[in-house]
Length: 154
Image (tube, rainbow, N blue to C red; front, side):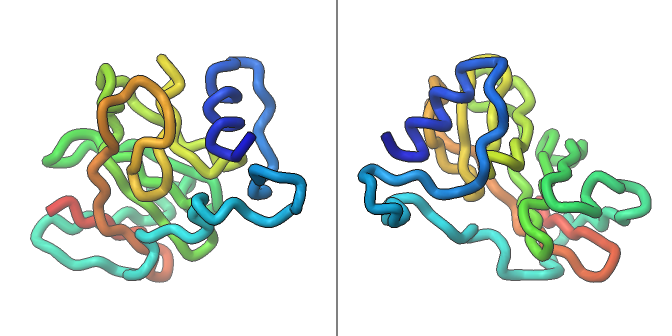
């Protein structure tokens, strides 16, 4: 069983405890599954720029001050989820699940975005991991600079 299958099964059970963020493997070697990404692709720019750049002060959004926190923000493209996935990494993506439009949440113990209705799972890059959703979610450049989180929804 790999991490993806384990997490998909766990998401289907409402009483499941958070999973320790250790990479599960397909074998007993203890080596990470090479198909499982270990680094996010969206954490390169600390302060993205663009015509629709939002500045979110950590004093106004204290959830984003610590790893694992997330908020939903109303924007010109609809609601966007902004999550602090690492100390120096923030990820932003459209919040409406592509299955039925239910708002997704970030589950820090699993390091995934999950829809609470039918357990659709998305990775840090907005890609579909498992579930009934037909496709992944659009992502937006995001980053942290000092006490401000920036998101560009252009």
